[in-house]
Length: 284
Ligand code: GUN
Image (cartoon, rainbow, N blue to C red):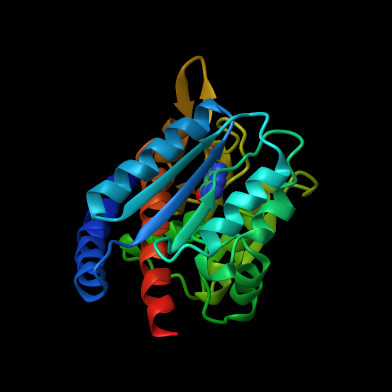
């Protein structure tokens, strides 16, 4: 089989067209743009790229970004103070703190400080709990993007075996919950999983979010599977996924490229979350 590419860039462009309309509606109804605060601490090279893309997408869609680039040595109290101010700022509808944070900053404490209503990443415990319980909540961006990418292939998720490799709070766990809520039969694999290859091989939908370059090889993929590669592994100036792309193409029916698959969708779902938060806040 020669896999078809799932074009995350094209899908994200078409969603952004719809979001543009929503952002314009908000602006004409409330006399200001939807506002998204983007906080970066330190100079992690990957974060620089991600944050730049997030700000660029805000501009494309007509969302106002408030960008904060804080030095590596920022005190936790200063970051908390900034978050408190943004929580209370009527022009800011969404807040995100780019991860990872420099050592010495307590990530859990900082994410918990963002008001759940303005939590554009969907990382706050209130939103994570809402996801688990099936309550209305802000969904984390990468997992939400993964579901859109799978649906864009026309694949029915209900009843399928979905295997998620990786159990991070940002991707693996919430992706598994979203797939479960779409009625897939879900297995989560991780570093202690015994015979991961044979579990992966049973997947109709395989999500690789392990953070290891080309971890998933062709022999781990079921013929005709949908393969979603969340990996962003930089090596010698080149970007590699968690899936060996050439081998996977021989087996999968559909596969996301790296770059140009999951990445653009993460950014677009973030903007969507900010716009939804803005409308929700006005309604409540
Ligand atoms: N670092 C890697 N992915 C993400 C993300 O989706 N949001 C934030 N805030 N940080 C990240």
